[in-house]
Image 1 (spheres, rainbow, N blue to C red):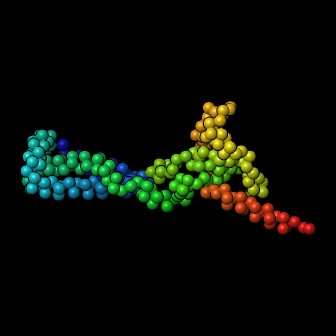
Image 2 (cartoon, helix red, strand yellow):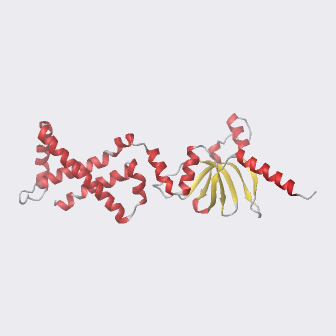
Length: 252
């Protein structure tokens, strides 16, 4: 086993670490090709350097650790090429193995110190659609959406956005649905709130076997023409003021 093969181990550890640590997870998920490779190399180098420095300290001041390393070296050395010019290949091998192990495991306890929600909120700020979905879920606010066939839906987002995944659909629990008229106005034709209330009260009837989750609608993301947060009080107020204006505009 030569040094080039050994140095792949910390790169794998760096790749695994940067893809799972909350601080770097979302940014890494957006990167592809050489950018992702360079990020993995960067974190692999940091892991390797940190582990090597830690090994030096522990070997100098912790005798049990030094004994363990001596035993580990006896196991690893036969698998390696002979040392050259005083360069100990076993040091590289042991440090690389540690780097891989730490990269694969260290992100999990660190994620308790760096909560996912904080970095998720930061990650969605540069994408309008993701930010809209995230805010709607965080504030328990419904969305109003127009689809390319002029159907309109008002409903609660079932699952928050995840910038590390390519969102192809959007699932909502509908409140109302309808269509856009030729003049651009909205005509609601279906109201789900009454049915949800009947189900919540446990009333017997033809829909007693259903739950609100059974009414979930999944809309392809690429068919959504526009979307915005929906507030029923604001909607009613705009409607009332529009009616007042129309009445004032009518000739007497």
